[in-house]
Image (cartoon, rainbow, N blue to C red; front, side):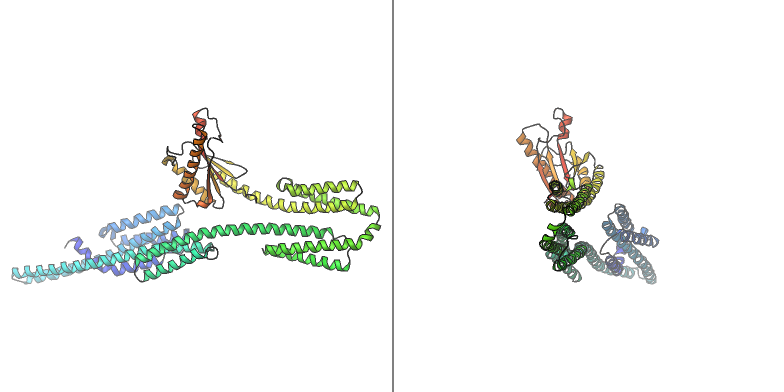
Length: 561
């Protein structure tokens, strides 16, 4: 009996086992893939291959073992590269191939033994017949019967095997869609991108229903649609989350500024005699200021700002009442006492302005700091002119401005430090991009890619595409920053022609990053400057080559409102 003839019933006998293994393995696909999960999948596949070899699969069906080992090697290589999801998928395929090999080998061995027994029985039967013609007829009948049975079983086995393979492939497509939906869910897509996220979940449910009904084509199409909606929801969620974070930061700064102003207002009236009515208002203002501080800690920024403003207004009212009630008394006070108050206010203003200056307010919040310094200078002039009330008022204004400048400067210093740390990391990583130079500027990090990047038709040359891939990987590691792509030329040709070429090259560079490297379009913009911004002399070819470049600017510095 031929080897091909023997394997046909073997496949029939293995179908139930293969189905069990495929279903079992597909069910193990994790909803999310980390290094440990991918490693466990590789270990399980390696164990299944070893069992297959022990069962004699290498001699019986070597092609399945070779396919399983090929999948395993690819899975291990992807794991070393940090591609956990792809590694787990290939390990899953290796495990399935190995388990199929075990089942086929065991079934083939059983069938071989059964065939040997059957052939022995037939041989005895043939030997017992004296009539050779009758024996020939019997053998022919048996052969025809086996041929018909083998053909029927082969067709049935092929159909069942194809069905199981289609089911396994569809399971894998659905698992990938589930991973995309889970990623979108973690990004709060149900809140920030409700419509595409709902579409993704509904499509995923439809895929599972179609799979259960055996409609693999419909299930695969629904799963792919779910993955597209989930990817769209993830992008929208990230954009909205970033906008929400920026708005929250703005409200926090406004709340901090309002609290600082309220504190200054309360500080102004601490040593001023006030009536009982004004005292009640002052205590109320203090309580509101404390509530504003609690609201700030709880990140209720609108409430914090409102309470702080009410506290400031109450403090201003207290100050007005106190000044009105005690005006006559203050006028009777000795000039030296008024002068002492003015000197004390002046000292407080001096200290607060010095604190703000030490915190870098003169450079970071110049306008507010200059207002504090100007109010302090006017207060000193008023003191020299013995206009003590005016000096106190100006000194208090100086304290208010200086306190605000101090708070703002400290916040900007923290922000600048964080930005500088990020810029340093980007500069260090960008320095590893071949044929690129890097520098840090006031706008952010500038990566200069010079030389002959483009063909005559201004398309990206194949020789530099690996460099652009390295650039794209860097941009993907820092997804929170916008990127400007600037095109530049040398002075060859007319200014109008060079400007057109630089714009076209910058746009083609942008399109390449979007179409080939998956950089989101909303992060990028392009502009051409022609020959107007050279970085080297255009007299010689080396200088012109340097001027034919693309500047990639990663905007790490926040844009002022």
